[in-house]
Image (cartoon, rainbow, N blue to C red; front, side, top):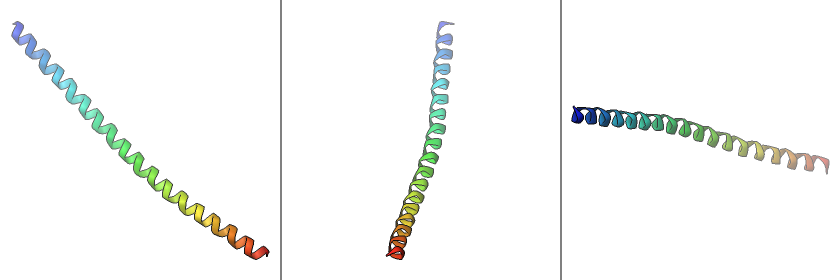
Length: 64
């Protein structure tokens, strides 16, 4: 009976670890998605910055 209880405990512990690994996998997927979106926002910000700089150059040329 003791061996059976130890086996049950071991299987239960193993299942807990599998669940944790699955949860970590889900979290990593979310982090990857957020990272992709952050990179897209960064690229868009760079494009906006370049456009604003061009507007500033154009405005300076027009006022001269």
